[in-house]
Amino acid sequence: MHALTGLRIVAASWVVLYHFQAYLWPVTDQLPFVRPILQAGWTGVELFFALSGFVIARGYVDQCGRRWDTRLALRFVFNRFARVWPAYAVVTLLALSWMVVASGYGLRTDVVAPHPPMDVQHLFRQLTMTQMWGADSLVGASYNPPGWSISAEWAAYLSFPLLALLARPLRRLHPLVTLLAAVLATLPLFLPAFLYGPHDTEVSWVFRIAACFVAGVLASVAVDGLEGRRYADSLGLFLSVTSLSAILFICWWNSWRRAGDFTIDFAGVVTLCYPLLIVGLTLTHRGPARLLARRPLVYGGRISYCLYLVHFVVQEVVITAVWRQQEQIGVMTPGLALAAPVMLLASGLAAAALHHGVEEPARKRLLALWQRVVEGGRGDRREQLTPPVEVSETPASLVPEPRRLIESPTERLLLTGGDFDRHSNAAPGAHRGSALRPHSRAARTGAGRHSSEL
Image 1 (tube, rainbow, N blue to C red):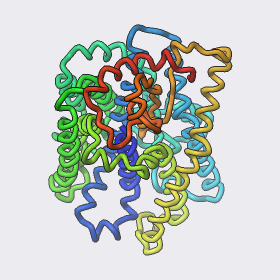
Image 2: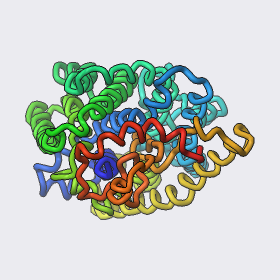
Image 3: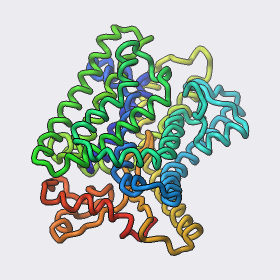
């Protein structure tokens, strides 16, 4: 499943390029076939939501879905908090600081996007990741505009322990039935997108997180039943290739259907392909999965959450400084065109610094604090949830999963290195055949019992 980590940097870069496309016209004018792809980049957030539901379900349905356990639910929620909050809080405070400084120098702070008032009440809602709860629109909801999706993911994390109780019994169904259910779960987004063409800011954020997160959970249940079947690898290759092809086709179809009318946007149709893409990349190591599992893309996937958080702040600082006067707003200058690649590079460097300097160290310290304070330094080896490096996060957020228990010498030989999820240790070329299937469910069920980490 390194391919899903690689997919994260593709999704994050897609969102970033969507937000930067206004400054990339000198490039896209020379590459007209690329522009429709960038214009659909906002749907990368939906891909993050689906990835989040998928990977969390892969790691935690067995532990949280057996029966209600308040302690396990609290541990899970704290795991998610430790994963998403530190980097989010730092960037939110940086965005607020920039707004204060810019206002002090008489600069406008709404040149790129509107923001909520700078007061204690709104700051509290930002730092508790609840600014979207009860909000009708994501426009002007966050000091750092991408933060709306973190607030949406936080709501999904809080609901997951209950969702797991509903998802685990679905394993009794045929996996192709649950795969179809995962696709159907995206219909609340697909149908309005196909019929009316709403822009991303016009789509209900509740529908966006609920439909895609549930689709990811159902896709995880489907994969659990498909692994080890004779046709699993071939099905995975077929789904990954066809879904990626369909995504590209829909992007170009959207551009054709819009016919230059920017008041409508049919790109949301593409969300129908996301559960199929995730399942396909999970079931095979061939084709697109092999490409996405390469080391540079895997590393990019690990810093993708931070890239998603910081890129808009970089953009706002530069653009606010360039478009200082009212008559300058929206004017594309040669200097700004040259600055666009520099902003992208600065976003990547800032993301790496945030990941290594804040995200990972803070997560480890928070989990150690939980174990020391709540577990009394001992912890219950039978019930602890283990959060390794993860893949999802709206864009959400990166998603931790329990470390897999290696139960046989054969698996120990095949599963080397890596820390992504319960299949992450598999070498890129390792085939996940039926011989490994007897161990997979036992490993997943036993991960919490044999782990000494929180």
